[in-house]
Image (tube, rainbow, N blue to C red; front, side):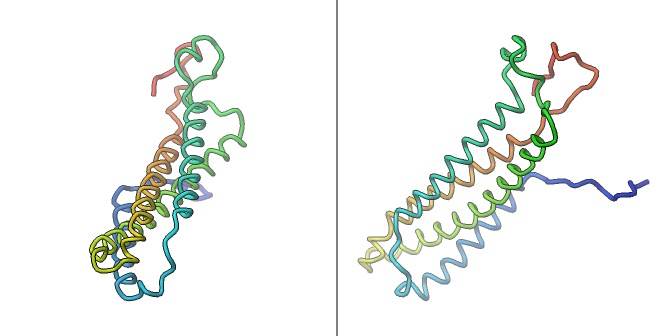
Length: 180
């Protein structure tokens, strides 16, 4: 009873367990590498965190605008300014939402991996900061990087959630939209 073209494409939401495993793997790998090769690492810079915060802002804006497009407020729907929730005006909009969903999934996984890496770095630097002056100097940049990566992961999850199209009821009038 399968379709002759096979099952349709699907993109499942990123599981929290996936993010946890990726983050823990990043932390473990970083702890191992930093413990062995810290003297060969370049100094941590705050500029890396600025780039991550900029990506976070971009993903948050995409999430906000996508959510606004797919779920117009009740007031806008009542006044006729917005369409029914979840109605896309053409295939180009559906493709754009699908691209945002893929971007969000990739950013969530990358953010979790870098969060783990920065967290492993932060843990090691915290332990070594009393013994090594360079570790004490790098600690603030590592903490800021950890926060930046956590915010990137959160913004990516928000974008992924915003890309979900609300269920549609074809029998319902546009005057009485369903509430998501």
